[in-house]
Amino acid sequence: MNRRSFLSASALTVGSLIFDCRFAAAVPSPAKPALDLNSLQSPVLFSGGPGLAYRDPAALYYKGWLYLFFTLMRLEDGVSYSYVAWSRSRDLLQWSPVTTLTPRDKRLDCSSPGDVVRYGKDWVLCMQTYPRPNGERYGNRDARIWTMRSRDLEHWSAMELLKVKGPDVAMKDMGRMIDPYLFRDKDDPQKWWCFYKQNGISMSYSTDLENWTYAGRTDAGENPCVIIDQGEYVLFHSPQNGVGIKRSADLRTWRDEGVLTLGQKDWPWAGGRLTAAFVLDLRAQPAIGKALMFFHGSSFSEDDPRGGFDSYASIGIAWSDDLAHWSWPG
Image 1 (cartoon, rainbow, N blue to C red):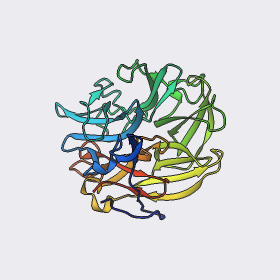
Image 2: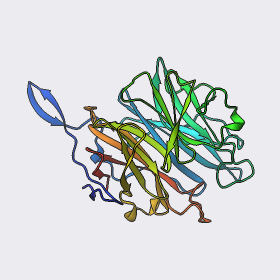
Image 3: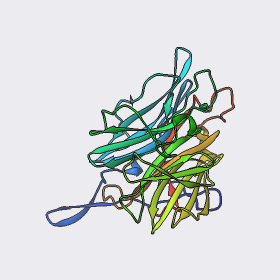
Image 4: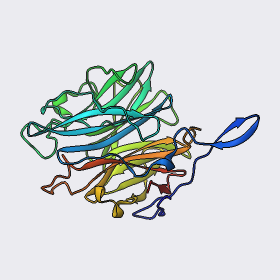
């Protein structure tokens, strides 16, 4: 049975069952949906541990497969390396082997895939470099945002810098920036937006995903994710803890909708911090019929010597019918 709580200024959740009606001899009968969320016994999809962390999930549903991209942090030869990695599943229970997409290089420490969008014949994945070459706790001032491209979601091109400050601004002058997210303008399908963490959430726009114009900022945390609901943009972001929510009709004026903490008080695996939510809106997809939220939780705080950043971070899931009430397994 799903644990339930309701949206307030701090914590929230609830949902309902999915039904997939198929026909036999012209008589409708209920059958197991293609993705049965109620078959999940735990909200944890990928579980971290000592020297192992799964962070910053981003999801895509394509041809019956749920693709999950994420930061993989792994202790190798006594050093923690970060990668952009991926896996896929049809049922959220059985996953393909985790595959890394980026090199082992402390000068890069690629991480935080924002999302995957379709542009022409290409899939475009945005991500960050988060350099920690000298053992820094967090990425240094050289952190930048990038894209990679693919035709099949398995083989990816070399990284290309997202010059979101404009084509004439040199890489060295762009400033530290992390956590990109790409989405189409709700009123102009030729216009793309990139939200990213710099001075709050900064935003730039483009018509070709290559030439960008800076368009301002808004107060928000890290890991932006934007979907469209009821004619508004819904921004999910990461404050110090939990999942912040803001809404806007025009990307300029935002109203605060509070902070979700889901079942964190009952989850030792997320007791240190719950953050980095990605919402994949599949409410119109008959096989699923829900908005799916992927996020990561850390067992310990990030300054805990047991590890709350490079270790003990796990990816969890929740779902909703209306983006206000959320449910999760167990």
